[in-house]
Length: 179
Image (cartoon, rainbow, N blue to C red):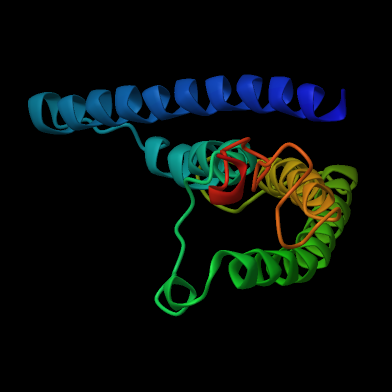
């Protein structure tokens, strides 16, 4: 039930991240056209993309990327271990990562609420509000923390075999022992 809900939220977030990426391409293309064809660039494009839209793309897709096991993984040493040792290392990794991302989410919520309450804006020609970026960080890292918690829960049963279904991770991929 909880995993189904998280998956649904991740799907919505991935769709929003996709539209944000399309938005980046659209406004950058328009900016380039305006710059070179009419010598009149759009001054707000860089700030919009770098402050808000890139954060939207990254943080709204980070949880789903982890769930699909498509994140960057450095596995030079891990490849030398057997499946059981790898699962133990993954449990340790999840146990260490979870409190880190909970702390990031908590601090980001505090920053977003503070910036919103104080009506903080960034200096420049356009007074961009500063609270949306930490709010996106809070949303994305909260979803990732929930996903890490689910993945850790899947590995609680038998550290030698993954979860009871024979699946190794929260994405549902079959493990070597579950085939």
